[in-house]
Image 1: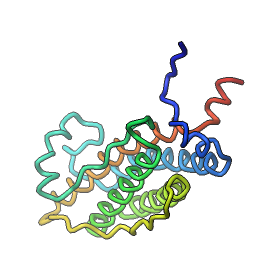
Image 2 (image 1 turned 120 degrees about the vertical axis):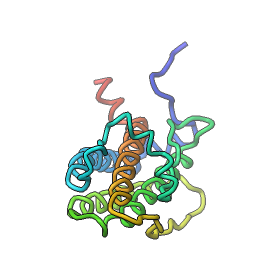
Image 3 (image 1 turned 120 degrees about the horizontal axis):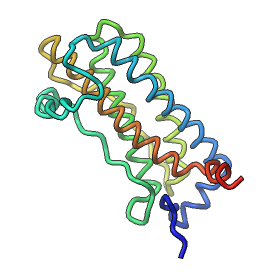
Length: 197
């Protein structure tokens, strides 16, 4: 019996995933998520001036209570496409997660000193969201209009809260981005071609 290193798409979605247009969107999305993941450390460095707030610190989990107080919602869960986690569900979660992070960054960026990197990051997240929504439209039976993100009302009484909110958003975006990259990689059929050739 053959075993696969990653789960294969469910039969009805595999024809769609194999289509040229879908694969172009997957590859465009993959390069955008890589760009976003590369930009996060620089964005963090330029915006976060509180020394205790480090991007890849084990201390970040201790800020969970503060995240609740500020009003930062968790990102949707992303998993590889399987019988229990359809292509449509995966793309929906990806789209919702990107909208969430755009809304969080849009809410906190007016209070940050150095906005340029955040503005660039927001533009890339928006572009990726557009690509994901195009894939989602192809995966869905009926067309669904994706709402544009509305800035969130975060509880930011002082500069420290602003710093923590920006920090936690970038930490969460990094983790969500890594999951997104893995999901997109599992949909990219050019990888199979590379490994076979």
